[in-house]
Image (cartoon, rainbow, N blue to C red; front, side):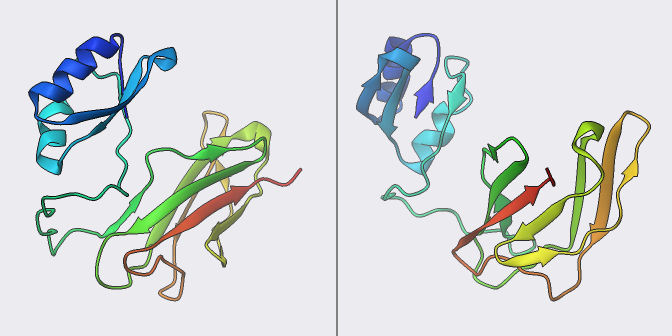
Length: 165
């Protein structure tokens, strides 16, 4: 999905790149488009686009370039889901091997309190005690044990934080 000030300019951008428009969303100044990975790279930096949501579930006719073997295969979703006392964020493993989180660094407003519960999938993360950072925020940095959970290759899992009521 591409969003901007002008649906017509977005349409022209997609069509110039050789992609196809799949649906119009005029209420939010957006459109859906079907583009290859190469076409997406061509249009993604255009100033016409104010927001881009990449749907990784699409069937791409061109193969992705091979991953960098030295790069971490774990990544996070573009958006997190916020509740009044919760945060949920999808973590995915694009690699071919099981990978684990090695550390977690968190910071949050002092008004939420110093205690929190963190999980990765079904595994509870044992976090170091939080400290105030001088800017009225709690923070913790925790090195995780090798046994901590991580998404299996080609899957995603939820990282969730809950603050006690």
